[in-house]
Image 1 (cartoon, rainbow, N blue to C red):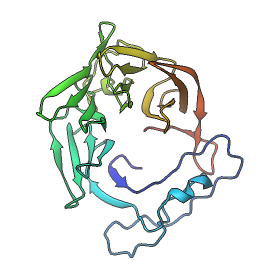
Image 2: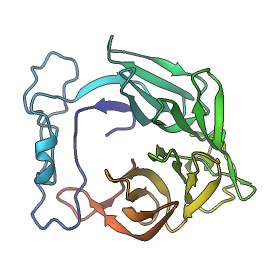
Image 3: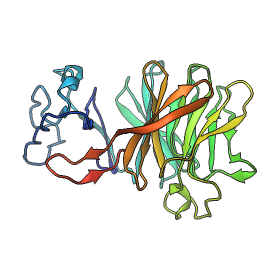
Image 4: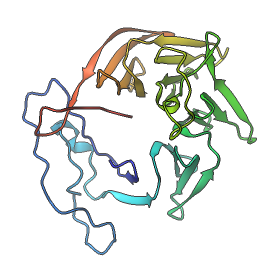
Length: 274
């Protein structure tokens, strides 16, 4: 997906898992997609490609890719609010968040300034959490409009630039902390990274922050397994892989490679982001 364009669809799976022995399908060559609305849609959408045939059943036949917005400098951190029926995401360099509302199909500025926010999510009470490059912190927006700082330092040193965040059913908050927001002034403000690139957990009751691991090149997107017994983290550093750990209470164990991604039809290794 081009970072300047934000697309949504029901499901488009493009991760090639390392244990698959079948040859990957070839991506067809065709002219650039016409987003004007003048070209009739074809079903199923030919741009939805399941590299793993087991994911084919999750692609809805009559659900096309639709473009909702253009013009962001760097679109990141999409998060869906199922109660409000809206999608929020970050435009990091423009320092604001945007929202697409299902009711009227309109995109508006949702929050500005946003602290050069990157990843967003909603907790189990419907409150939005955001990772701020500018503030080098993870925050939660309360119903009252107040902002609660979830984490901005560890071991007496400022965080690097929190990137992505998720919430566990036990109310703990997990996030990654790579250096991208402090490398220059485009996504944040240039500064020294004082901490190892790590994954953290914040206890949902006590607020205590724990470093889960720094055994990863540059932690980026993260998610839980459906049973919440494993943690997956995308490494956009030198490893360029997806790693997985077993969750053991407040700790993670047995870190290992889950997948390394290659571009279809090539031997080139690419990176997973979120």
